[in-house]
Length: 197
Picture 1: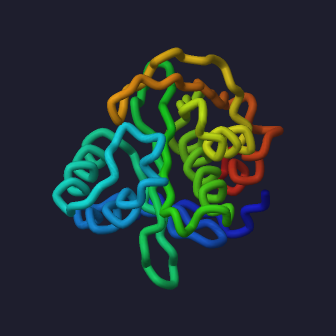
Picture 2: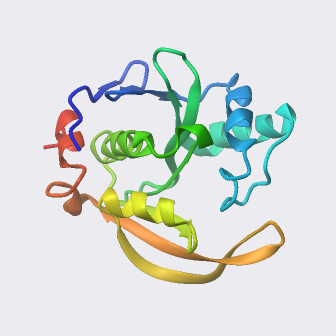
């Protein structure tokens, strides 16, 4: 997938892709998160109930701001937040982090998350010097698994009853992407655009 407009501005920590502006989450983004997580399909495979109140979204936002290096996916024309994508559980010794993402339901199927994820992963490998990125997805979440495979991740394990949400235990699949995989994989163009070649 080509990224002719992929760029990173270190001063603002903003990424630009052909169709999106990715900026760090901000303290006033709760309403945007409520619109995203207020749809049951978005939270279907998430350890998060479907949100119905701004206060709930504020708690999620506060957690992201404290524990995640997470970007808001913004439509540059409408300025609407379409989703989030970012890195967390950072281990500087092993240069490893976990990867998470979500997208507003009415934006599914347009390739937007693949575009955003490629940019964030390239940012992680180039500017944060990551060596490994982990990702977990529910075993039934076919869209998420397809995204990770398209980005070059390798499935490594089935984690039995690893997660608990909505009153039940869930099996999860573990995926990982190594820095050495990226040069010849789907993210190679994004990596080069951010100076990683």
